[in-house]
Length: 155
Image (tube, rainbow, N blue to C red; front, side):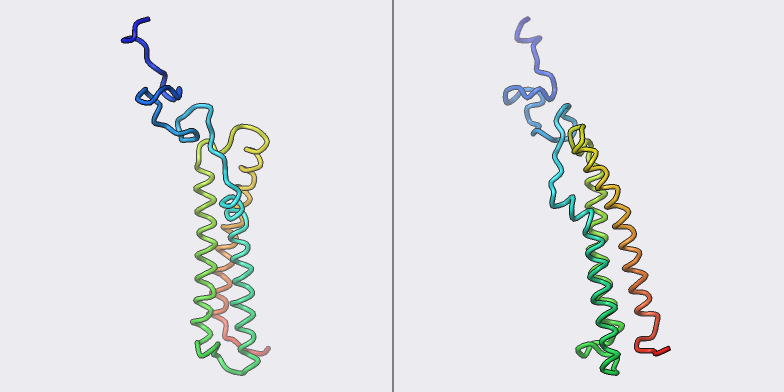
């Protein structure tokens, strides 16, 4: 073959200047190379919403109940409704961020080389998705309950 008819196949990792040489390993479109899922974002995607929901329960409900002991509707000079909005908004943002990270990791193609680890990552992302959706809904419903129900009402 002459030099005019020889060419490197795309993604073959040939010399600089050849076709496919500008790709880095793990980029989409390169056959046989998959990106590894880092553990930090994966665990945040799985547990971020649940941890945010737990913090919401502790701060939004417990602190509102503590104001009833004082007999006032203020928490450090802030009305309970404003505190509840902040104690709902911040965990909701964290839970939504965990959901977005989960979706971004899910959309990667392929997320892992085929095998047992790939199956485990897919399973964790599926569980994380539903946990994050559930957590966002529970945070919003819990915040709505704190705002809608009058604090310090004894039955």
